[in-house]
Structure formats: structure tokens, C-alpha cells
Image (cartoon, rainbow, N blue to C red; front, side, top):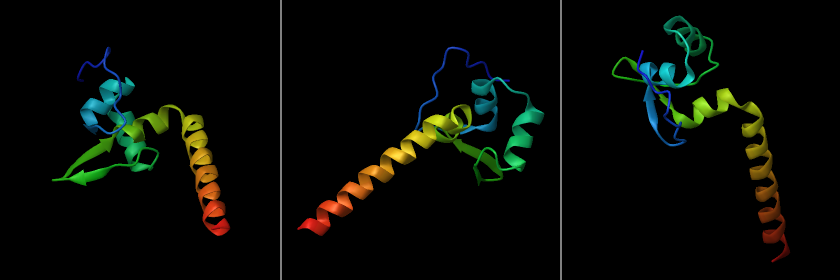
Length: 86
């Protein structure tokens, strides 16, 4: 396992499964299970998974994602209302 104990997860960074395992401090079998069940969403590139940092952050803190989505929806609603008023 790659040691990432002092590394921060970058929202826009792309990670390998090995790097993700190190950041999340989980075993190889756990990362495989999370990928297989779709709990962690990833793309395959050249037969290997690549995982976005924002996906790792979503898995660690789903409440943060819900707040971000709610904030975006409010913003979108305000923009639509402003456009209607023109």
C-alpha cells in the first residue's frame, strides 16, 4: 500500500486504486468491494481504475455532498427566477 498519511485529497486529482487505498486507509479487498458495488464510482483507463478526488471526498463525507447539491440547486433556482424577471 502506498503511504499517504500526510497527504490531503485534492478534489480535482485523479487517483489510482492503490493511491485511493492509501488515502482512505483501507485494504485491497475493501477497495475492490467498494468499486464493484458502485459505492465508489470510477472509470477504467487501460484496464485500470481511476478515481476522482471528489469521489473519495463524497464517500468520506456524504453530508458535504448533499449540502453542495442543495446549494447548487438554490443557486440554479435563483438564476432561473432572475432570468424570468427580465
